[in-house]
Image 1 (cartoon, rainbow, N blue to C red):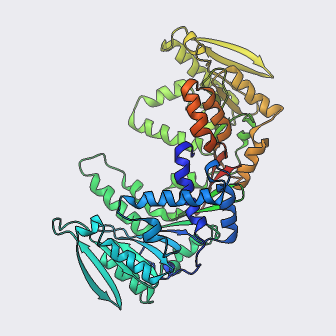
Image 2 (cartoon, helix red, strand yellow; image 1 turned 90 degrees about the horizontal axis):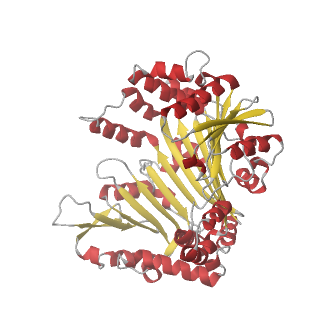
Length: 541
């Protein structure tokens, strides 16, 4: 979530994408080698739809409502970003800046990396590169030039520290290249001249591109093979003298084959799409089961009140709890007896009957602090009711909360059990629970929260029918099993209601105007046999 002072810097960066409507040609992809393990590119001249959508979104913020304000914000923000380096964006960079900026990185010794920037003016771009030697940091370097395949490569080293990585720059095929490795720059030259394979022609990159939006503002691509190899080496080295990690767990990292992420502008918000490619044949049985477990729409969402301003829902609760229980049983010989006595495991234990669906919602409470409920799906209401009853009795008998008492009440065909104590009710809390005949356990911060969940399911309105939620989830994935949702407007209203005096005045003056356009945030996640797909959407109205 983005709020307050953090909003303006974000807007400045995003507006830079919109404002520079420059030449669309780019040679960056042509020169990026297949050996790049991480590749990020920002499109400074995106499609017309992206430009129009982004402009519409930005103009909804009070300090960016016209082009003059936008231009000033861009100039101020980017000039400030370069001032510590002794550079001026307006003077040194803007006159030649082209349509794309990219970053390429290779894993390995010293992590070779380079920034690649399209140029629309050869002379001004070369003048900028020459200026690097004259700024404060550049003056402390010893510079030398070498020619490789007709391209001049400049290398700056520090004599006082022979282990420090060099500063390396070159101007190649209308592209400014600045990095920390002469060998990487030479590889960029070779790739540009067709002597080495390109990243965009690799099977991994093509496969990832096919499942990501092509109309975008930003792209991140991570190739898994070499990156995972480096990570495994590091894990094995750090285990010496430390807590060992099972070889089986380390080897499962080989299942990661690639990651892709894009950001794009819609007419009503910003969208993020993430794809994590997985070779499931390299996972163990438990991990494969978790990956292929049901990831359809969570049935518990119909029990979430429409007034909820925060939600986390998932479909893998059973697998997660089972893994935790197995680890506890393996490490403690007494755990089985305790779990069986509580009704979690053993004959008709609650864990075996969980469906996997869960939802945690946050909504207005009876006091200043918010309330909420935890919803858990089961195919045996009796087993889960037994576990919760034993858990409640254990809490009362422990004496950990003074004067804790158990109370019950009937409500619309269910019995709600609550735990009351002066220290809790003074703060507006009275933990309560019930397990309905429909196989849904409702654990709330108060009996009223439990009742609200029952009402939402029986008569509505439930969150899936709320207009704002419908819009947000419609921009993400309506059928995803995992959902994280925040109604920013309602959450902000709750925060404001808890303020007073100078804090309230400061909030209304400095924060509220920038938060007001931010309506909601949603993240959805869906598992498939060969990948995990996540979608993010920030609704701006």
